[in-house]
Length: 152
Image (cartoon, rainbow, N blue to C red; front, side):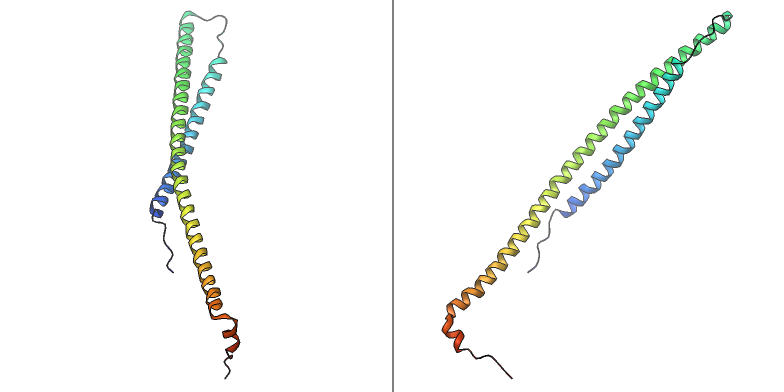
């Protein structure tokens, strides 16, 4: 008996490939978000550790304040980038989750298909055994006694 193939197997393979690609994208996005957060933390730590000397000439004071303002802007921009990267990573992770759910649904269909095939094979085997048993019952025990075993 020819075994019936799962007709959605090519679709399942495509979904598995999509899921793997989404997983790789999610890992990359999570790594980028972690890097952005680390850079923002480094900027904020450096800015928090900045201390102005008690007395500076006016020109140096103005230059130091401009430098601190620029550093604060850089730290703020880095934190905004880290936040945006985290949001992007979450979006990519949700796409991975959706791809995994689509794959899982097809895998469940495939499992049902395999279970149905196994059940059909078991039923066919049971019918064959029943046919053998009922064939002997129709012949009856008396006919079995009349049969002479073949010898050469």
